[in-house]
Length: 65
Image (cartoon, rainbow, N blue to C red; front, side):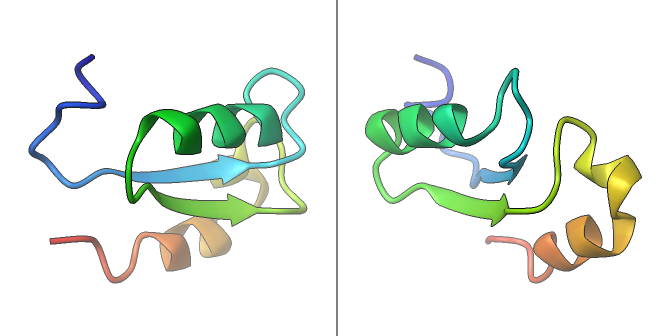
């Protein structure tokens, strides 16, 4: 419930190659969150911020308001 009802803008940045919480997690998130703000990093896995910090930083800008 907390994410679904959050009044705070949320951007979900996800490494799709993550076997734990990758593409399948994005699909479920989109089912639950109307107008989901999702950035899919196709070539990254569980630690996208470690694997490619520049891609993650770019995904953070501009931050939703």
